[in-house]
Image 1 (cartoon, one colour):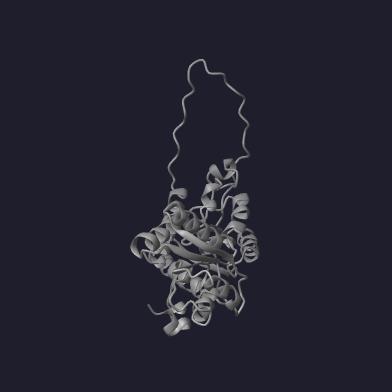
Image 2 (cartoon, one colour):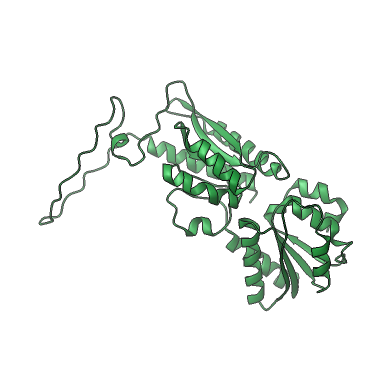
Length: 310
């Protein structure tokens, strides 16, 4: 399923959540079992005039949207730099999804997309900005796993729900967050499929693995390593690179010395492009390059040209 479909699914779920939250249905009273010990209830502060009672009783209160304003959905995504294509694609898909959603009780939706650069530092900075805006009621994102991991605690503290279309690191949902959700598979599934495809479909028995040392790339690379080894395959190298560099030929030469049949890369487009364009020179011209979904897209094909064919 293409990532843009995940964006529409994610926004659909967010809008459905908001519609449920705006329902006027009153919850039924719970009966007390006979003989149960009664405890003194703490009286909540009364709701402001015109506000539902839940605004006074809920831990996080209510988001008050003034008449004529919009319901804001925040997004943190890489909008500039080497990975801007991801942010542009997903934010445009989210905009279309919100337009399709129409109105909710007479209010229209607005996407507030902020550039987090795809980094943990950027993710935290954007989360702090969005969480401080009382009219932002939910987050479509973040996009990269590292940025998402840094943002989750900030939204958690404010009780702002998240729905990511693309953050796949398994730890994001394993930690029991009450606000983080996603509509995409985890790296546990993607990594297992990659290992099985390499071993069973391509018949590869020796692979080298490179990764960018970040939450997404390294986490995915570790899954591929463990799954491929469990199948009986041999991992000749497991090497981290520094993101943002223009030359990985030394690392590739070390890998070439082990004569792997395939090279698996866990990371994003920018570094994947450099690796593919330098493989032939490093002596890996007959080695299969196997990338993850972080290297998927037109930008990768354009920048690798004939080196990316096959």
